Image (cartoon, rainbow, N blue to C red; front, side, top):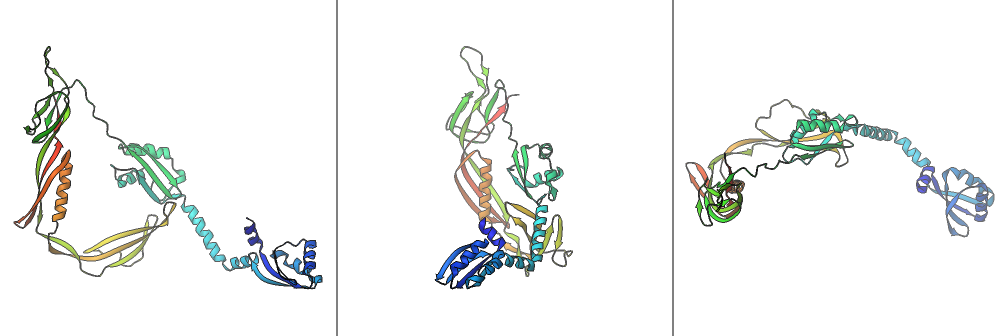
Length: 387
């Protein structure tokens, strides 16, 4: 703090040279002139630091001591004031920019959504727009409770949400509603049947009567665990069958693709063009914006002017890359992609794991056929409710 005050008041570094420098120091002390950082160069020379405002008092105090004062350097004070006067327009521009930044921070220019998995970001942003929260919204007038109530009404999939505003950035925290568990009556009878054809490798029966055993082949729809429980002393009783039945299953999936496909290839010089987006208004920094772009591919990059994680400005720089492309016939080279898609499709179908798999590729009739043959181990038991 003391250093900052010294820079504001201004200091000078001076050299005092004469026959009686100690007499000059005594005269300065009597007049109340503050001196510090004294350095003895030789018996007749002293270097010292004083405030710029007391330089006149220092000169008059040493007049009768047969000494001369030479100013070596200035720091702060009038030097800084002269520099600021020369740069007044720069200071005014900085003050205006700070004022605009403070005013801009009262509006929302960037919205971040956190926690959405089932719902898309676009769905949440559209619902927020309907509730009065969007780009350019004056956030001090927002009621978080009102926005939350309207959002939960608009999107029944949400269990909870809130909007946190930090400067010009709004962070929307959402928690999606969990699926309610299956509700059933213990007294309601049901069987466990085979959902797929296979050979049983393992059974785990928790309730009910097993009708099949390990190593037995079963077909789709066949009852595996019955709801009818026999009794030696009483009549048969009905229960809700529970258990899992693992079986080996086999699949054969085929993907088809034309041998000759059409691909896009560059057919001209690529170029870029720039635009500015101020709030919701776009300003094109190029000519011919109304011309159609038939035959061109366009990639758009957006750069928001602001400090990531702290604040955002209502100005976005847009860069568009355009390249003319033409379609041309090419041979299909998608065998690996087709194999990957077949594996992903199979994993989505089964409730277990793939034991072994193999692929075969054939070409006939202008088509490329990729076939997946796989053996899987999965749980094939499915519930069948009694009427």
